[in-house]
Structure formats: C-alpha cells, structure tokens
Length: 108
Image (tube, rainbow, N blue to C red; front, side, top):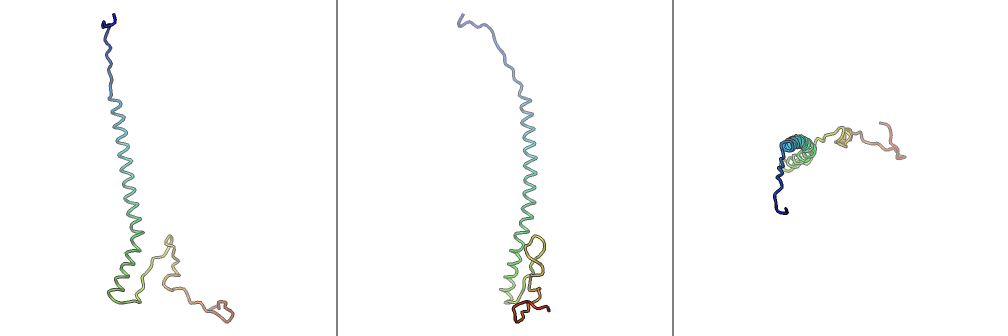
C-alpha cells in the first residue's frame, strides 16, 4: 500500500482578484506620481524665478557697466514683503542724518 495511488487532488486557483488589486495599486501609484511631478514642476518654476531673477538682474548690471563704462549706473532693486529689503532704504532714498554738536540727530 505504500506506493499505491489512493486518489488525486486537484487544486484550482483564480488569480484574477490579485491581478485587479495590482492594477488598482498601479493606477493609484501613477496618479500620485503624476500629481507629485506636476507639483515639483510648478514649485521649481516659481523658485527658479525667485532665485534666478536677482542673479539675471545683476548680470545685466555688470554687462551695462562693462560695455557702457557707466560706473554710476544704479540697479533697481526689488523691495517688498519677503525680499528682506525695506523699500525706503534702497538707493539712498532715506533722508541724510544731520548731527548737532552733541551727536544727537537734529530735526530737519
């Protein structure tokens, strides 16, 4: 009886549910990846303008000074919220300080 065949077992497996789950996860992954890529693209465009803008403006100033030999040319700096510059302190637009004999500021 050791080598005698007693019966046969047939195992059937349906993998369609697993395939559907994998397909569902792949779609979700692609959507998340697409949204992430779009967000990174728009964020990099904005940051590129913020970072490259002053550098390009400085390059224009250097080119103007170098080509025109105009050493008195003034660069128009941007000011406002988030730039770290006070609009009245740019380009010497603050009134000059007057000092009296005691070192205190006098009213103009």
